[in-house]
Length: 449
Ligand code: ATP
Ligand code: MG
View: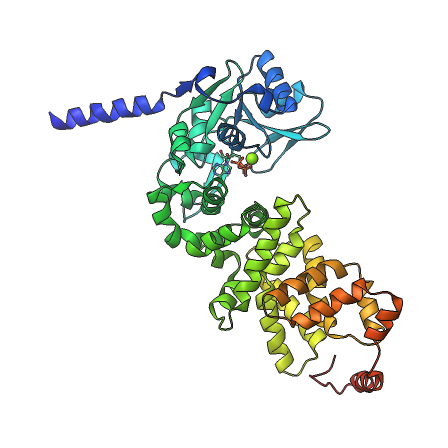
């Protein structure tokens, strides 16, 4: 009876797949001394109140790989209100799913209740799914096992159980970790459709961990990439930052382009890069990303606005060139180009105003570097955004897009004393004055300003 045997075999496989593999303390490398004392406090308090409490996700993965975790996430069978009762310093957050944030002076420990991934059949009111398969709401509490299966990659679904210090593995994550394999749990096509952001996460973890992407996942990426356009732009803002501020921005950028994932995020930049013939647009972006990676390596601050300004510079520059060719003065052309590019971009990745304001400044200060005479250079030097704009100019000049003499002149001006500065900024004053008068009478000279 072959069909009967097949059913029996499948049932057996199902059962064994659902048995977790438990790695007791001697069989793994996680020691409590590597765990943040605040996370331990949270785990122990939950445990002594009778709840199951585990570390989960990126922190377990990173600890097992000998890396320092960015943050510590806790998963528990306690419900949000029960968590709140245990911790004075706790706030419940999240609309899509309720999470508890336990606040300490130097860090926040995120505590989430075990959740299950619901299917349309069982989901009822809780599940909202689009035609493309994208899950819009999935707030259903579940068991630890269900919690493991709803996670994205097997290496992100390992639990460190504070009850006996073991690692609990429902999905074969330990083996994948040992083999350097990034594998989605379940059917890759379905999992990417449910949440297209997982495609960006695939690139992020592949690059960050130096892992191989499982063949089936990899094969899905290029033709599901366009689903990213369905993701709310506000959610993509943070994802883009995580992608490019990971310390491997150049490689991330190359991988995103390789899997067709860059275009849905930055369509105007992608078009500009594909039209390039002089070479420098790509060189500029790669240099800016190299610069970001270097700053992260040196523990220097990296600002989201500078990164976004670099990512969108090429379309801004091309639009400014076009508007200028239509007869507008360079500074005005730049302002118009900035508005045009930003209003198109925020439909894809919503960049908040607190970030677009300094981006605008960095961009619109660029044509002002051309003015080296009179008081204008000093006004520019005194501008609060001068330093960032000057750093931006340096990258432009290193990539061959801006005149290297111009960048050097601004470097010298900053280093010069009063007398030297005066010498550098005098000469040809009469001509300049006449030009600016002409502009105020409304006769625009495209070559001026
Ligand atoms: P990082 O070190 O960058 O923080 P991480 O794995 O901790 O990596 P988070 O974004 O902090 O990533 O997410 C925490 C965990 O939540 C993940 O490890 C994964 O188990 C789960 N998770 C996050 N995003 C998704 C998603 N889109 N789909 C399924 N599971 C997810
Ligand atoms: Mg994390």
